[in-house]
Image 1: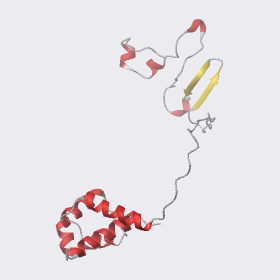
Image 2: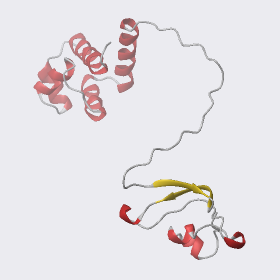
Image 3: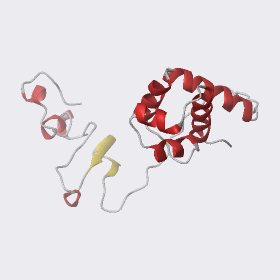
Image 4: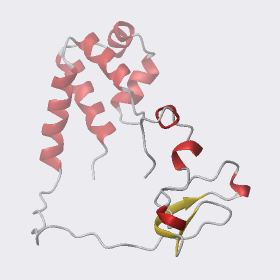
Length: 161
Protein backbone atom coordinates (compact mmCIF):
# COMPACT_ATOMS: atom_id res chain seq x y z
CA UNK A 1 0.00 0.00 0.00
CA UNK A 2 1.34 3.42 -0.93
CA UNK A 3 1.06 6.27 1.52
CA UNK A 4 -0.31 9.43 -0.02
CA UNK A 5 2.48 11.53 1.50
CA UNK A 6 5.10 9.36 -0.23
CA UNK A 7 3.34 9.62 -3.57
CA UNK A 8 2.91 13.40 -3.29
CA UNK A 9 6.55 13.77 -2.18
CA UNK A 10 7.73 11.73 -5.15
CA UNK A 11 5.72 13.90 -7.54
CA UNK A 12 7.13 17.08 -5.98
CA UNK A 13 10.70 15.82 -6.30
CA UNK A 14 10.12 14.71 -9.90
CA UNK A 15 8.65 18.11 -10.83
CA UNK A 16 11.51 19.98 -9.14
CA UNK A 17 14.18 17.88 -10.85
CA UNK A 18 12.39 18.21 -14.20
CA UNK A 19 12.75 21.98 -13.83
CA UNK A 20 16.42 21.61 -12.89
CA UNK A 21 15.96 23.43 -9.57
CA UNK A 22 17.61 22.77 -6.24
CA UNK A 23 15.93 22.12 -2.89
CA UNK A 24 17.26 25.45 -1.65
CA UNK A 25 15.69 27.44 -4.52
CA UNK A 26 12.27 25.86 -4.17
CA UNK A 27 12.29 25.98 -0.36
CA UNK A 28 13.18 29.66 -0.37
CA UNK A 29 10.49 30.48 -2.94
CA UNK A 30 7.90 28.47 -0.97
CA UNK A 31 8.88 29.94 2.40
CA UNK A 32 9.79 26.61 4.03
CA UNK A 33 13.08 25.27 5.31
CA UNK A 34 15.30 23.09 3.13
CA UNK A 35 15.22 20.13 5.58
CA UNK A 36 11.42 20.32 5.77
CA UNK A 37 11.03 20.34 1.98
CA UNK A 38 13.46 17.43 1.76
CA UNK A 39 11.39 15.42 4.27
CA UNK A 40 8.18 16.25 2.40
CA UNK A 41 9.74 15.03 -0.85
CA UNK A 42 10.90 11.81 0.82
CA UNK A 43 7.42 11.20 2.25
CA UNK A 44 8.57 11.52 5.84
CA UNK A 45 6.44 14.58 6.63
CA UNK A 46 2.76 15.13 5.91
CA UNK A 47 2.53 18.67 4.54
CA UNK A 48 -0.60 20.73 5.13
CA UNK A 49 -2.64 21.91 2.19
CA UNK A 50 -1.29 25.44 2.72
CA UNK A 51 2.33 24.23 2.55
CA UNK A 52 1.58 22.10 -0.53
CA UNK A 53 -0.03 25.13 -2.20
CA UNK A 54 3.06 27.24 -1.41
CA UNK A 55 5.39 24.58 -2.84
CA UNK A 56 3.23 24.32 -5.95
CA UNK A 57 3.38 28.11 -6.41
CA UNK A 58 7.16 27.95 -6.06
CA UNK A 59 7.25 25.26 -8.75
CA UNK A 60 4.87 27.24 -10.97
CA UNK A 61 2.15 24.59 -11.04
CA UNK A 62 -1.42 24.37 -9.78
CA UNK A 63 -2.24 22.24 -6.75
CA UNK A 64 -4.68 20.34 -8.95
CA UNK A 65 -1.79 19.41 -11.29
CA UNK A 66 0.13 17.97 -8.33
CA UNK A 67 -2.88 15.98 -7.18
CA UNK A 68 -3.58 14.78 -10.72
CA UNK A 69 -0.04 13.41 -11.07
CA UNK A 70 -0.30 11.83 -7.61
CA UNK A 71 -3.57 10.17 -8.67
CA UNK A 72 -1.94 8.80 -11.82
CA UNK A 73 0.97 7.41 -9.78
CA UNK A 74 -1.41 5.79 -7.32
CA UNK A 75 -3.38 4.18 -10.13
CA UNK A 76 -0.19 2.64 -11.49
CA UNK A 77 0.84 1.06 -8.19
CA UNK A 78 -2.49 0.13 -6.63
CA UNK A 79 -3.92 -3.27 -7.48
CA UNK A 80 -7.36 -3.17 -8.99
CA UNK A 81 -9.93 -4.74 -6.70
CA UNK A 82 -13.28 -5.64 -8.23
CA UNK A 83 -16.22 -3.96 -6.59
CA UNK A 84 -18.35 -6.14 -4.35
CA UNK A 85 -21.72 -7.06 -5.89
CA UNK A 86 -24.65 -5.11 -4.55
CA UNK A 87 -27.35 -7.23 -2.98
CA UNK A 88 -30.01 -4.54 -2.78
CA UNK A 89 -30.90 -1.71 -0.46
CA UNK A 90 -29.55 -1.90 3.04
CA UNK A 91 -31.97 -2.21 5.92
CA UNK A 92 -31.53 -0.78 9.35
CA UNK A 93 -32.47 -2.72 12.45
CA UNK A 94 -32.94 -1.21 15.89
CA UNK A 95 -30.04 -1.82 18.24
CA UNK A 96 -30.44 -1.45 21.99
CA UNK A 97 -28.32 1.39 23.28
CA UNK A 98 -25.80 0.46 25.96
CA UNK A 99 -26.23 2.16 29.30
CA UNK A 100 -23.22 4.27 30.19
CA UNK A 101 -22.13 4.59 33.79
CA UNK A 102 -23.15 7.98 35.22
CA UNK A 103 -24.21 9.22 31.80
CA UNK A 104 -27.40 9.81 29.87
CA UNK A 105 -29.76 6.89 29.62
CA UNK A 106 -32.68 6.13 27.36
CA UNK A 107 -35.91 5.50 29.22
CA UNK A 108 -38.94 3.74 27.86
CA UNK A 109 -41.92 2.89 30.01
CA UNK A 110 -45.56 3.53 30.79
CA UNK A 111 -45.00 7.26 31.18
CA UNK A 112 -42.87 7.52 28.07
CA UNK A 113 -44.37 5.82 25.02
CA UNK A 114 -41.55 7.33 22.95
CA UNK A 115 -37.88 7.64 23.75
CA UNK A 116 -36.81 10.17 26.33
CA UNK A 117 -33.22 11.13 26.97
CA UNK A 118 -32.75 11.65 30.67
CA UNK A 119 -29.68 13.21 32.21
CA UNK A 120 -29.75 12.57 35.92
CA UNK A 121 -28.62 15.01 38.60
CA UNK A 122 -25.07 13.61 38.54
CA UNK A 123 -24.73 14.40 34.82
CA UNK A 124 -24.01 18.05 35.46
CA UNK A 125 -27.02 19.71 33.91
CA UNK A 126 -30.79 19.95 33.74
CA UNK A 127 -32.95 17.04 32.71
CA UNK A 128 -33.41 17.01 28.96
CA UNK A 129 -36.40 15.05 27.79
CA UNK A 130 -37.34 14.41 24.20
CA UNK A 131 -40.68 12.81 23.38
CA UNK A 132 -44.26 12.81 24.58
CA UNK A 133 -45.20 12.08 28.13
CA UNK A 134 -48.25 9.88 28.68
CA UNK A 135 -49.33 12.04 31.59
CA UNK A 136 -52.86 12.58 32.86
CA UNK A 137 -55.50 13.97 30.51
CA UNK A 138 -53.24 13.80 27.46
CA UNK A 139 -50.92 16.53 28.72
CA UNK A 140 -48.35 17.37 26.04
CA UNK A 141 -44.58 16.81 26.48
CA UNK A 142 -42.59 17.20 29.68
CA UNK A 143 -41.82 20.90 29.33
CA UNK A 144 -38.97 20.10 26.94
CA UNK A 145 -39.17 23.42 25.13
CA UNK A 146 -38.99 25.36 28.41
CA UNK A 147 -36.11 23.25 29.71
CA UNK A 148 -34.24 23.91 26.48
CA UNK A 149 -34.76 27.66 27.06
CA UNK A 150 -36.04 28.17 23.55
CA UNK A 151 -36.98 31.80 22.95
CA UNK A 152 -39.57 30.87 20.33
CA UNK A 153 -41.26 28.46 22.77
CA UNK A 154 -41.45 31.13 25.47
CA UNK A 155 -43.04 33.47 22.96
CA UNK A 156 -45.65 30.82 22.14
CA UNK A 157 -44.52 30.30 18.56
CA UNK A 158 -43.27 26.75 19.13
CA UNK A 159 -45.17 23.88 20.68
CA UNK A 160 -43.51 21.10 22.56
CA UNK A 161 -43.68 17.67 20.96
